[in-house]
Length: 86
Image 1 (cartoon, rainbow, N blue to C red):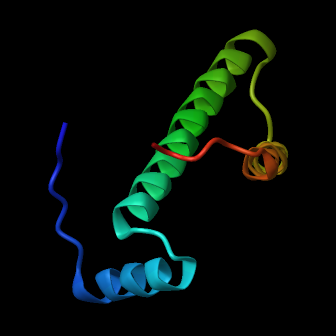
Image 2: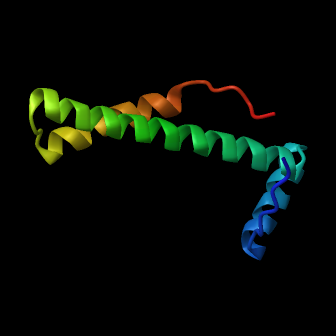
């Protein structure tokens, strides 16, 4: 499936520069970035669902506890090695 995305000038320049520096095609960088961001959004949605399930099970937590737990899980997510996009 082909999708056309309009990229604003400053962002397009950054993409072109990154492609030149990394000796990769802009399309490859874009696919990789999109795949990684979608993985993050899916992970975050799952974490939110798990949070709501824990409220039902365990009751409410303080916002400080939630933020600490989220920060730990987010850091763990970004430390994981993920496969490159096709």
